[in-house]
Length: 166
Image (cartoon, rainbow, N blue to C red; front, side, top):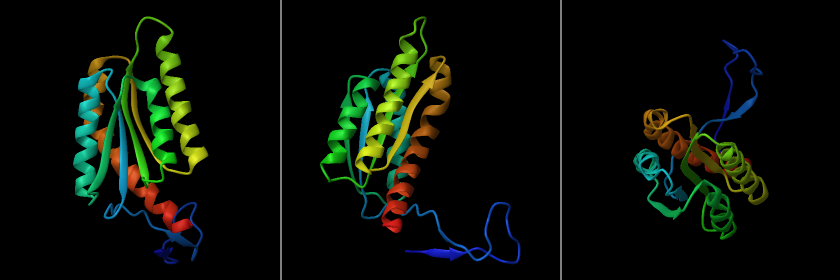
């Protein structure tokens, strides 16, 4: 565990002087990460995947597994199965839900997010949720690579954090 005492010389707002803090750890060496990608809006999913895999490699993750599912609503069940397997330190959900002309967008976006959160909380395995919810393709295209990278960072940081607090 790496605790760093906060500096007493220049206290930050909201920090307690001298209180140990677990530093963010983005070292992915030795971590096993599972990725679930929805094939619906496949080009966006692959853009998310590209950013995610690039960042995982940069952080030293050499053990990852990709699974694909038809759409965003199928992501939580696959994540749950992977989390329960005991084979993964962290998981990543990738996909894109683009608003259409019907209420279906809200159902898919909300239920997918709820399912991902529920799996994370019931299994104790961190899940980085990078299922984009956008108004149109252009918004998704602008965000996909960066969001994929951020998901990889989140997965690694949370896996390391949970190991440190146990």
